[in-house]
Length: 621
Image (tube, rainbow, N blue to C red; front, side, top):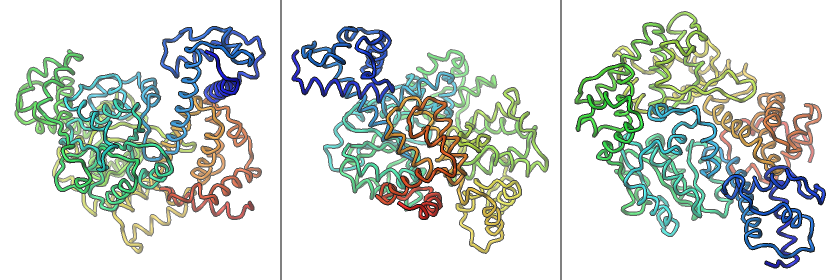
């Protein structure tokens, strides 16, 4: 195949640029007699991007040298030219996705790399973790990627409808309907992975509030098509303002379609925007087939299953069946039951009684935070939970002893909670707490405890007083906002006094959690993204979001990014820049703000934006 001189030069330059942006290696800096390892490095990178068998001989070392350095040679094989073009295209797509994903605050971009990254990081997880609904290390995504789930009958039909949805006017392409615990989230994850290589981009909405505040603007400024997936419509439907904002935003974009998970589809705001017939129900009649697949891979649970799985039980929510099956096996409990919910609550009550024997205050604190999570979707910290437990215990809890793996109470708690450490410098001891599944809260902890555990405004005030006494500021900020007390309330006055003493200002724990997710993504990308413009953007956002915690916080984030493999000059420069000499960074930040780079969308951390802009106003352009 003979190439035109201009086409040949362009392809060579595109190839060199793609390899540099992917690996940091500049092929043009090599001598004409390039060493074997550089040829192998390019070949290995191509195998990775083109999904070829590792070690494949795509082209020879001689062809490699001739293409890079002998511009007078115009004849190359068709397969070689196609390989180079496809590699350039794949690298450019990867970098575009990386850049786009890094700017999302409330959603994840579902790509092959997303799946590969989860698979690489999740190998410590087990099938039991997946079936119990654990959330740490993206356990649910990992289980679906590993095919630990069971494909539902409607999957192919739904995927076919999704692939055609941009040809229709209705913006809600499909609704996946099923009771709580029926498997909607797992189904939607399976569906997302099944359509991620189509002509549209798949966004999984992790936080609807952050998504509506920050990410729609990015979609508006893009030419691509987007499929938005949100698996928990009941979590927001009581908040009319966010539902209205989301639906109106979706209706304002021609390049957006939506798939949601909901418990039922009657009298919903989205119905008039949903294509007729595209409400797909997850049927309990599939439960027996799903359970049989699970038992086929987990023989230890078979005996218990033969005792408890009756036709009535198999019609119950799938999560409850699996939870009861696993926990009954662990507790060596058998015997038939007609009511799976009663059996479930019996297990939960028995677990909480065991904890109560050792830490009675912890059970009470767990109930109150479970109630707040159930009613208001509160995100809270492990430290806040233990501080409240110590308030009820009237004594300090040995926290090191509590968190030992052999501690009975801790082992039980991990059946219900996932605990994840923060990575923001200065907050490394902070841990976020997640309940594995909302049924553990709504039908378990909130229903299985004694009648004297009631949640009301007096309970809230006691919680708030306890958290104030422990300087538990961030979670307290969320509580104050939830209950919207008047400004002259004694609790609000105490809160404001505590607020004034906190350097980082008025930041609720829910926002701190979002910032932590941002830093985790920075660290994840450190050794895989080379492109300078990507890191210039990330540097500016990092200064904007984290300068409020002090210059050392920003510098430590930069240092950790470098430690993890980032070689971008802007990051290394920022890391070695002292507090006195950082004006050039702030000048650039102000320039971009004035250009409207950040002004077009309100950020959830608007107080951070305002504070940093106050500093910027004193810096000349």
